[in-house]
Figure 1 (cartoon, rainbow, N blue to C red):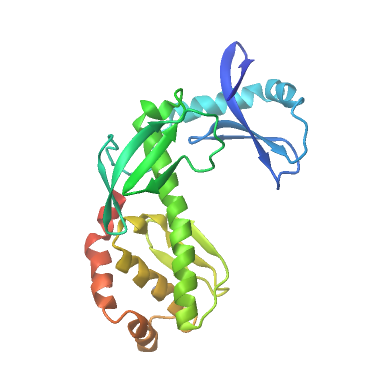
Figure 2 (cartoon, rainbow, N blue to C red):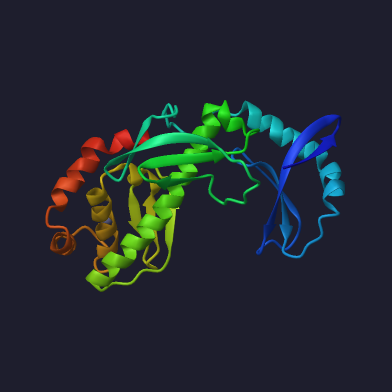
Length: 245
Ligand SMILES: [Zn+2]
């Protein structure tokens, strides 16, 4: 983490190299704070001048971030040792110091029935619950990306259908969707549901590759691969709202 002085205030920032960036740009997010995105092979020497030039914008947005309300309705307490639901099992939440300057892309991992967050000693999430929630969500999203990709490939092969792209989203109104182009969207909060429910959602969306509707022909396809799908549908209706807490 680097620092600079803008209008008399010390500001911390990180530098991230991006393959796709064409120009040097600035990003501000609740998760990462101020990030300077540098194109591959781009020079770092211009950073101080850019930060000075954009100082009013940076200070305004950092101030806004401080004041903003928690972005999600997650009310997980996230105390050390707390249990978190994950595919029908239970994970123990751990908060661990990150000793070396690691370049992790995800702030944590799920291993041996634990969800572990790794934080540098100066990280605000040690004391800030909202920051912790965001980091845990990021771990869940990453796991969702892996799990849904794996399961979609598995079921697509069995069902002899194809799909295009998988996107992980958070849409309050839906668990998954399938576009006409074959793009699949899944809600990461499903990772807190039992694995069989997640499978049902994957099969449901892939069945739309054959039937772009909810006709009886559609449900026949779903039933062929998940005979007890009604049970999982009911589970989502009755318990789905709990995945939002
Ligand atoms: Zn549907």
